[in-house]
Image 1 (cartoon, rainbow, N blue to C red):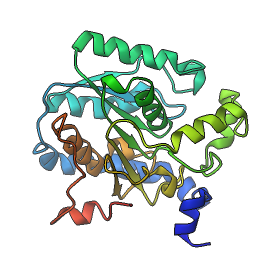
Image 2 (image 1 turned 45 degrees about the vertical axis):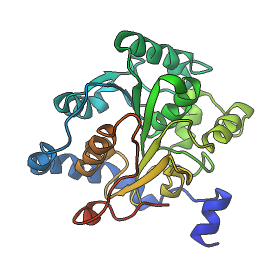
Image 3 (image 1 turned 120 degrees about the vertical axis):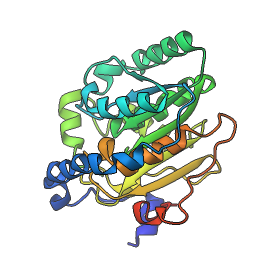
Image 4 (image 1 turned 90 degrees about the vertical axis):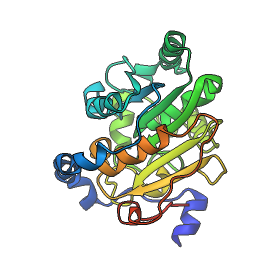
Length: 264
């Protein structure tokens, strides 16, 4: 089956074992590259102070988002952690995501401004879900290596997810969540993904084609997406867009090396 057909049918396979077992080693390289990229990152577009809610990946805590948090604060945004501890699926967000919705409402009430949602892996799936619950107070969604579409089994974490959360992959609730995930978000949405992702099938980590969606490919690991300089620059670019002036990422010129393709 061709890759295009696999995309259409949602039958992409989980990443290879080699990519999976080298995830942490490759993520350490992403972290090590940050000091060298610092001079460039300091030139990133400055923020307008609007709030940004950070949602961690599966089994991860808020500490994993701390480097990005500090970067966004330095740029001039108002970053917020989700304050729900480790991301253990519904155990963290509530059976209907009500705890996550309450946190978003709290931030909006405190700032009076629409909130950008940035979610890593499962956190990205939750960010898209959250945008459907409160589209009127969400500015945009940015997902990092999130399982957006396709089968939940097209990841190398589905068995751990099922065991830890108690949520059956083939259960009716999960099927409903997967079906919802295939829909285009009600707000502008950007998916950042890597073809070398060792956890989530990269074909499933992209937004559906629409005038309000974009897919930005970077080079790197899944576990390093939150500390990848190319990801940080792309996030800064997305956040700097006017609230009523969203557009797709510009990959012209020298950016072609860091951002190989749109992925559409």
